[in-house]
Amino acid sequence: MKNTLDQNVENFSLKKIDWGIIQSEMKDKFGGDIYESWLRKINFVDEFKNYVLISVSTRFIRDWITSRYLDQILQIIKLHNKDIIRIEFTIIKKKHETIEDQNPLKNKNIDINKNVSFLKDSYLQYNRIDPNKNFENFILGSSNKLAFEASKKVAQDLAHYNPLYLYSGVGMGKTHLLNAIALSLKEKNKVKFISAERFMYQFVKSIKSNEMVKFKDYFRNTDALLIDDIQFMNGKEAMQEEFFHTFNALLDKDSQIIVTADRPPNKLSRIQERIKSRFSGGLVVDIQNPDYELRYKIIKAKTEELKLLYSNQINISEEIQKFISSEIRTSIRELVGALNRIISFSRIYNKIPSLTETKVILKDLLNLSENKVTIDLIQIIVCKFFKISKNEMLSSRRSRYLVRPRQTAIYLAKLLTSKSLPEIGRAFSNRDHTTVIHSVKTIEKLRKEDNELNFNIDSLKNKILYSKENEI
Image 1 (cartoon, rainbow, N blue to C red):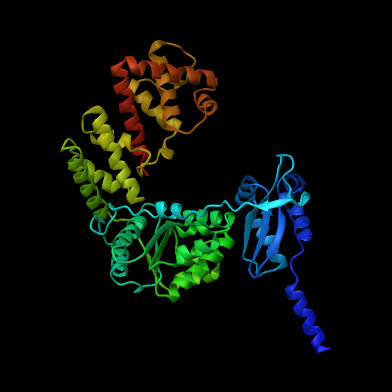
Image 2: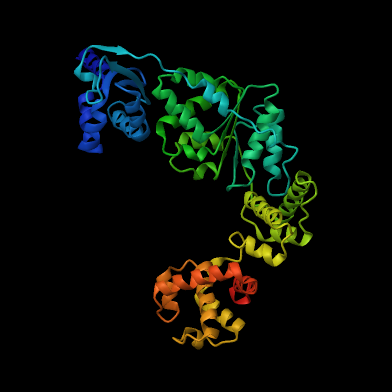
């Protein structure tokens, strides 16, 4: 009796999945239209230890299914055999096939299309390391010192901290450090440096071209694997499975792994727990928001670089440098972006902007939020400037001394708030939105012709954006 039971269990474990059932479940999940158009064209070829080989008749169908439905199809298959971790395709093209007749199940006269090229060259082309992002030009501060020192240590002594996991918000220097490590290691070691998004792309392409063995060999035959923005692997179960085994294979041979992310390992969403556990088992370092001292050092350094680039034509004042360093606090990338805006203004108008002009140029980046600007505030400041009362502005009178201030206030409301045209019209005594459009177009036209009006509007804009009523 026991032998019979053991034999039944063995026969059950050797039984291959029933593709007819899989097709039925795909039809239920995706609907009849999608199934008939695309998924019915899939033909089951064979089942192996941990993957399923299926065929379609064209590369176009393969690419379409892979990009849209493959992850969900894998989940359906795993319900019938949890050991299956991936799906591989082959192209079985019928001779004299027409577009209307692409189902390989209808014709036994088939031949295997073996003209599939591996993407090895693409890996090599993407494995680019920027020589301009090195340890020497990474600007140090208290917020990034630990990450810098850990990166230097890894670059000098492979597998000292393994894995090294760096995380921070966007624009804080993670990729710069990753690049600097790769630059230092590549002199004496095999280095693979790739983003998680690109890793995913190559993984999918390798599955589609039946070249997973070469994919595995490429990423496991290295002394150091550096992956940027690992959080983009979220939800991709098949790819995470492959990454997990690659991770273990590299650790077993004492290869260094360095990854970056926008959050700590335990906060990664839709990433396998065992992968998060591996990350947490190494050195986890966060790069914090830069303090004022670091921001000012960065602005000074970048200004000096730009002076050399433009042959000393650029001379941003100390006052503006300190203002940018004080006000742009979100990320280093935005800090440098703010400086680039000032430089662009200087080159276009051939002058260094004043502090007031700088505030206008950078208004969307500053802590002085536009969201605090209200139509009521605009009306008050415009009325005060033109020496009229708010009741006069909102009245139906069309005297010239009232029309221009009213049009100016409407124009500034459109420019400085996110209110819709009907909302602006209602704020001006229920005027029609066509009146708002007319006012905006009139002021835009006059600004091109009337320098005094142009100057007045810029002055009003500064008063509105940076008035005491608008302080946070």
